[in-house]
Image (tube, rainbow, N blue to C red):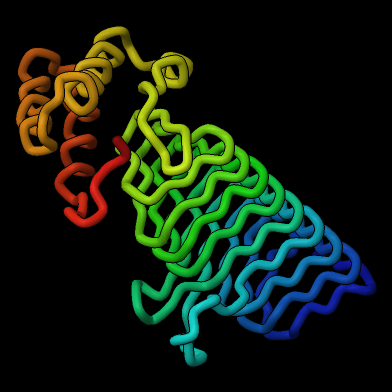
Amino acid sequence: MTAIHATAIVDPGAELDESVTVGAYTLIGPHVKVGAGTTIGPHCVIEGHTTIGRDNRIFQFNSLGAIPQDKKYAGEPCELIIGDRNTIREFCTFNIGSPGDSGVTRVGDDNWLMAYVHLAHDCIVGNNTIFANNAQLAGHVHVGDWAILGGFTVVHQFVRIGAHSMTAMCTLLFADLPPFVMCQGQPAQARSMNYEGLRRRGFSPERVSAVKAMHKALYRDDLTLEAARLRISELSKSSPESSPDVQMMLSFLEQVAPQRGIVR
């Protein structure tokens, strides 16, 4: 049977796999679903239409699935969906989505989310990310796979953070952060590409070299964003192995809103 502490309050409508454990004084609402192997620590509140996958480790004092901090929200049945094998440390707050977007706040798989992380309504977080302590996302922020957010990173609403990118401690993001870029500052400025992270993830020398070429086009050669996109598009011809990385960058740049731009 599910190991639920005697002081926990689990609504009869909640759906918990028999292997789930729930700590003392935790409150779980009627629309919550929790998959096999997930552990929920003491003093947590999990509410709303929240679905949590398999083998997650949710530490004490978390608030998951509360209504969005959005004055327009009027009780619509929006959702929070959390994938598998995530670690969610203490005092995190993840809100459900809002009807002004997809209605879903989503966290993927294998993410490491440290203490005091905030995910506002309609945020989308990919897989294998790391959010250090006090990383704060406003509404509608999208974060790509393998991104790393340094402690006290603050992200403005609707900003997109590309895959394999990285922010330094206390970074303030008002603009989109392209894939692979490392940034720092208030507001953020591009510093380099995440070359060491790419090597650790098995990127070949050819792929790393293509990322260096993309960095040069975006930041070193004084090109407009459109001119940089054209140069980057040529890299697939000279470096076929890097084609998926090039296409990911081009896709990201094509979606940049003119009024927001990219981190420079």
